[in-house]
Image 1: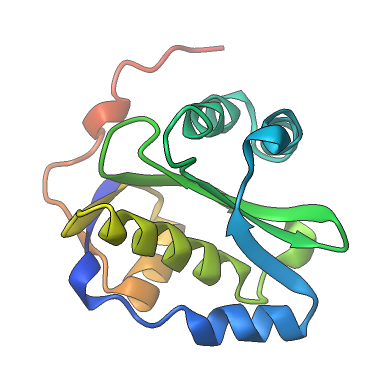
Image 2: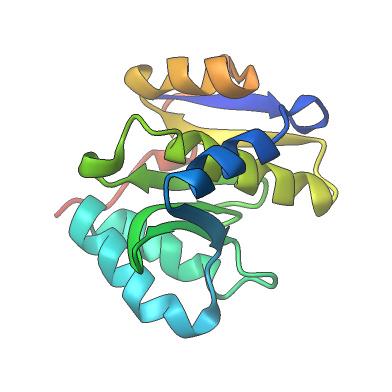
Length: 159
């Protein structure tokens, strides 16, 4: 699992993704502080304690660095940035039942766009799996950072 580098000054437009999702009844927006317990619990249930811990940190940032996708009042995806390290995208995930509809792409672009607005020129996608690296490369032109595995994720606690 290598880290990937993204040029934030060459991001594709997010509006077409947002409009497509809106027409399907899905919204992508910044999570609100009062939603913290609900969002973190959803992430824990769907993706485990590690990602829930990182998501929890996103609510301590100002601005909140967590975006969510919702449909019919329920969370169907999330994405965070500046959690484990500054200038890092992730974690991010979409409910299995909602995958393949462009939600992951919209969440990725929302986070990276927010990072660009904060003044970052580049972003790091930490510990991308081989399966996900192709997605990131295709959507935002992410490139592997040589020698970055295991990167910051070395010596992780077990259990």
